[in-house]
Image 1 (cartoon, rainbow, N blue to C red):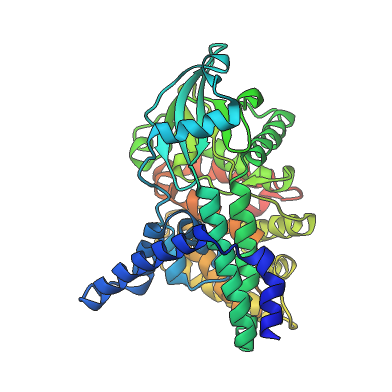
Image 2: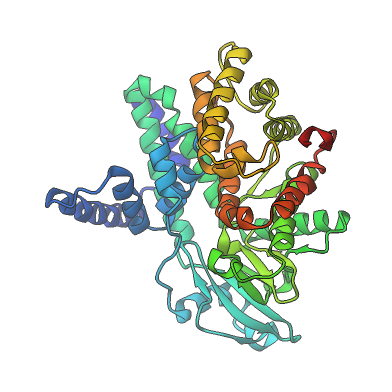
Length: 444
């Protein structure tokens, strides 16, 4: 039976050849070095050790680390928190190697036919791609996102090998099937390899741009894509001039309330008003442009949630702001998956006990009802996941992407709460009034 399974899964699960063997050797050398350091006394905490190992192993494992950070319903809290620090930054590949990708995708005469100039020093270098400043032959300033040579082969080799190993282990040790390792790795493989198709990212940008246009949103903008200068491995976009949203900068930025309010409100509206939402709006992907608008960039990671889940998310957000624990519990049942009957009254009581404990630990600053629990949303959201799990509820991947994005917005929480109370109240009311059917008088 095991041999039969191996041969059935082999074509789609693993590509055994020189590339695979070479990658296995590279992985063994890196892990061996880390293990030697541990044996010689470098006994750092296991989550930290694993995160550092993943960063050294490169693109595949960095992406898996990011998935761990965004999946509190699947992994222990200490790993979720540690992997939020997983750095998707690598040493840049020489331009002569990146230029080969440009020539293969756009033709050897990409200069001067498409571009008049390409700056050979990258603006950014990540595990999958590098970004360069350039100018089109027609005169527009752009950035070019170029896929790193061989990265898709490495990703495919690593992910197929891991998936193959998981399938084999689940057959050898049946009790591991409950953990659904093969299922998790299959989902990782699908989402990570999708990031390698820049045509999909261009489509994501177009969808979100239409959403902004239909809503008459002038405060948030996405970069224009230039299809004639783009392909599966090359993505050419309008260059934004501005600065990334970082705490040090925001402390001295005027109109902070409007900027962060516009970003947060737009993202909230996209959850139910657009067929996708941006699922990777960390500081580097959120820009304050020179003209005062907010730029959303890098749509490689997006989330799509079903209409049923949208309704549950909307209901949950309203319930959290109204401190309606019964509705919170009912909404969690709509969003999550469970194999057993859930006592919603008991779940509501556990949620209430948690919120009251958080509220009692925070000094009363005169904030409106429903604001206090957001002072520590990172811990709040992780705790909500833990409480749900104790009642047999497991949230789907789509909802954990939402959780991850809430955590990103939380990095600006201290600045928001340092603003005048009236502004903070205004920000919250601007957001919640967008939730259909919400009665603002309930906040009084």
